[in-house]
Length: 104
Image (cartoon, rainbow, N blue to C red; front, top):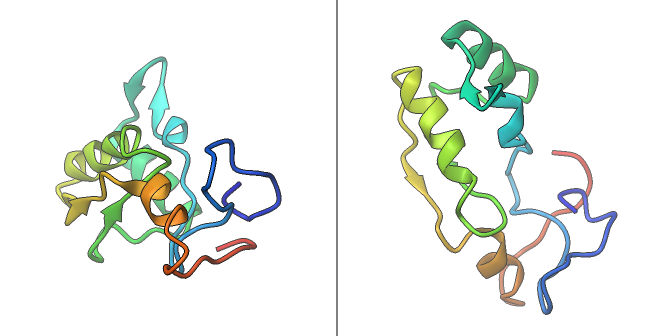
């Protein structure tokens, strides 16, 4: 869905992502339901093109799992600037907002 290749399950919400967004699935930050160690978290962020030293706003489909990404950043001493609680449901459902497709 992030790349715009699969349909969005939420009615009225377009597939794709916010321009400039990076796709980092929250599960990549966990092992057995717990946050990975800091070095492993840094590696996951780096592998996904996310620089924890830059200002970050976390987002997801509905604003829930974005909290896990924010928690991982906090564990690294780099708290997210914000968590967009409307997330993709709000952004992708608003036809006036730009949508990007393809890999980020």
